[in-house]
Image (cartoon, rainbow, N blue to C red; front, top):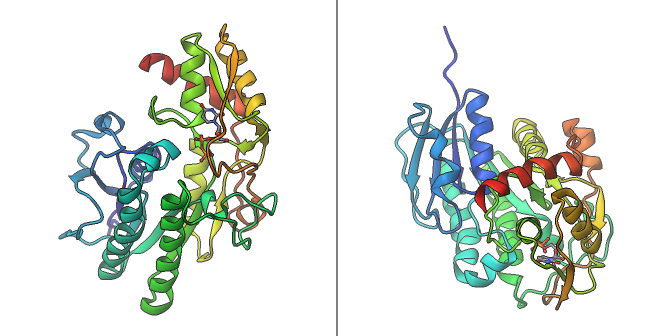
Length: 314
Ligand code: UDP
């Protein structure tokens, strides 16, 4: 007899990562139920799935009770504003989706005896004093600063996930996602990749914050989604960093974007936002060992695809 396809619920399915994850799950033969309230997600990201009999969409805030009739095998909790500008504008919704939304998504997983994966973040390390960041580092977070609503919501979400794991024996996974880029990022989400690319494509000044000495490490979305899929399918229930470990300063990154777009833009310096982490690079030893995963797409190739996408949007 043919095995029934697994059913996955993806919260935040209309977002940048949620929509790419939904595509990968469908390609692996899953039935996907996507949930999103379009606060930061957009219908454009999932419009290609319209009419796909294996994809069902529910417009809902996941901070409210999630009611589903059918059996569910996997719950992937991706819903949250995720760019600093978004969560500065939506601090309460960010706190609610990280806390109440995680609680509802865990409740759904418990009820359906499904496996649960939390999309956590490198932000739980705050402005890190350990470099590169290993999963056993507890972080350096300002709870009451402008980023606190996101960082603390995700820290709470990790605590809640482990509580459901320990008390209710829910099978859980926690991925700590580092900076990721690719097509379907929102042009105006304020993050450095869409900001620099759109400024460069318009030959407008590229806005480097501070002196541009702060570092980030950018992972292409297909590498990230593959790592996350492997984590869910693994037996590993402790937090796992997924990201690319090639680190560069924001000034170097601005120059790279200007080069890659062939732009005439000049670099201008703007004030550094409060609590902006000075350095960030994932230690991915754990993912390499346990998932046999490592990123494959080099920055120049990932940027070529991302720039091509943004050209169609400008
Ligand atoms: N940044 C910048 N110019 C911009 C937007 C961001 O220099 O127009 C810097 C920002 O200060 C940070 C880094 O780029 O150091 C990454 O910012 P992003 O908002 O993408 O996300 P974060 O990694 O801080 O969560």
